[in-house]
Structure formats: C-alpha cells, structure tokens
Image (tube, rainbow, N blue to C red; front, side, top):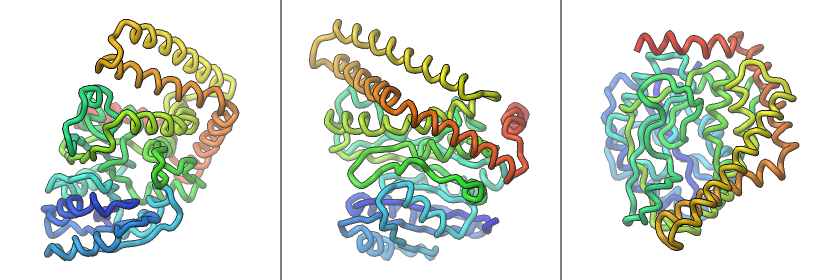
Length: 358
C-alpha cells in the first residue's frame, strides 16, 4: 500500500486556457503540515501550450509541494487517468478536472475522510456550476455537467457511481482491480470527442470488487463551464457520443444491483429497459406536441427525445456487445473475489450497519 497522503491529479487535453484558475485554487489549499500531498498534471496529447502554461502558473506561487508534469501520448481520458494513477505517490488520488476550482480545505477533508474509512473505494463531493456567460434557461433545467448532490446525505451511496470531477480513488483499491485483470472498456473523453462514462465504469468496478462508494457534502468545488458548452450543438454532440457508454455501464450496474443473475435473466432485464425507453419516447414526444416550438420547454423535451433516441440506438445496434460486457463483468466479479477474499454481497449488506454509525 502507498503512503497515506493525497495525490492531486489533473488530466488535461489542450487545457492551457482553463488551467491558470484551477492551479491557483490548488496552490492556495489550506493543508495541515502533517498531511503529505503532491500535484500531478497529465498532459494528454495536447497540441497547445498546456505544459508550458502549467509550469509557468505553478511558479507564481510559494507552495512547496511536489509538482510534476507527465505526458500520456495515447489520446483518451481513461488512458490519462491510468498514467496519473501510475505516477501518484500517495494512497488517495484526487481527480481534479482542469475546470474544477477546489474549496480551500478540499485536500485536508479528503485525507480526513479516506483515512477514517478504509473501505471507501471512491469518494465524491458537491460541485456547483459557474458559467462564463449566463446560459439559456433550458441549460439549467437539463444539466449534463458534473455538479449537484450525488446522494441524499453524506455517507455510503447506494447509487454505486460518482462523477469524475473532484472524485477521489483509493490507489490500493485501484491496484487490486488491475491485479484482477480490470481494464477500462471506455476511453472516456478522447480529444474533441465527448464520449464519457469512464468515471462511472471505475466506480462500478470498485463496487463489484467489494468497496464502498461514498459521498460527502463537505467536499465542495466550483465547476467552470465555458460559453461553447451551453449551445444546442454541444448538447446534441454530447448526448449522441456519451450514449455509447451505456453498453458498458448498464451491464455493470445490473451486476451491482442483483445478487444472482444469469445470462437469461440479464437479457430479460435489458429487454425490459429497452421497452421502457420506447414508452418514454412516446410519452415525451406527445408532451412536446403540446408546446410552442422554440420555447424553453419545447427545447427541453426535444433534448430528452434526442437522449432517449441515442440510448435506444445503442441497445438496438450493440445488443451482442452488451451481452459480452455482462459476461466480462461477471468474470471480473469472480476474479475480484479470488484476489481480495471479500464477498461482494456481504460487503454491500454491511452498508446498513455503517450508516447507523454515522
């Protein structure tokens, strides 16, 4: 196991314009002297001045913590995160996006929580949105950004997933996943593409391996949203490309939710989900007909239809892949059990006793 401490890891692609403010918030962290920490930037095949800007910005501050820039030439956020995990010296790896502005006590609070709960595999906080310019009303009504509550209250989360922004991963847990043969099936963000889901995939793998997913509202940060991310064009691109992740995430989530599930039962649940989406499509389409075209409500319902259509398409076109991913997840579950000696379902049953202690 790595030494207890916090490794702040930023994975960035062409982040030169966003990094200065993010780095300022990290350099100004209020961290007690007894907590060791470091700062790592993973330059993921950037074509701008990301590394130079990062080095220049960090030099402005008197923070004496270890600062490192590493390069990952293979495009894709999942590859960059893996590079960050391999480069990290400490047990608690804080994944800070290049547009996340951390609260001054974020690192100290991360250390306190992770050190107190050794079964936490992933820890998440509360993100609030800061827009470069005021967005249309439908943007706030249909948010696609990493922000907001991730559980009803602080403690173990039964949702099994956390958004990657501001998320903390226990390095020893990640190492167990790798030892058992886990490899991300999703590349996550890839250059200018908006594919996603790598953070959810990692959380679900941790749950299958027997770890707890934890939310704590004391961990707060601001998520800066640039003006180019509040357009209909951006939303359509995001909804279309991010839907691809469901062929991996849905099988994993079903494995987490059900004790005993064979392939036949899994097919039934996926088919049931497919027809639910079809019914939802009809209902939302009907509601849209009643709205004035171009109104905020009409746009909102149109986006919901676009999202549902993208997911239905994934089910229809990738059915065999979904089945194979389910089998892959079950095999990982078996390997995790052999590697750790933990029983996944006993670990989940213990959540109720943990909640009572909080």
